[in-house]
Image (cartoon, rainbow, N blue to C red; front, top):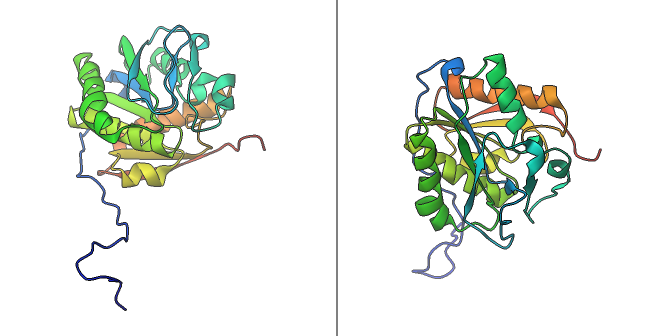
Length: 241
């Protein structure tokens, strides 16, 4: 069977192309690592300018000593209700502080960066936002970067920025509610809990589940054998069921 309908015309069949591999092997034990967390889920401080929900490639600086109740979400691409209940469902800042106190990880950087990946300009994220965030994290001697995304476009933007961090020498993992998108876009490592978009890091106020997702994602950064490998996590949460 011939698919060509007119000689000389380009095929209209879409064939996705995964970007080139980027993979930085982790050289330290987790309890010696400085861990950053970024998100494409539209998280920002309540006193910061909200993201433009029709499309925005800017980012916000979040000091890691920011109380979680001073954070909020501005994103029009998915149901925000879980984040409104508990910002840790997307940006688990409280869980990360607890892991430092536990000694599971070494430390957190002074600040991290968040953005709104929905409707994102791919070229801007690839050539401006991603490299800027990677440069700022690397300057803080970050070893590991974990990342979440909200909607499908967010997962794309999250993966683009995560790849920039990996290329800068940090070991990264996307915690994905939509793992096929992260995989096709070339995420270095992926963990996939059974959660709805908007709750990548676990059910609101379910501290044991959130902690387990973060711990296993960190362990996957350490143990992942090769680029673009996915680990399905045994944690399930169904929104409003």
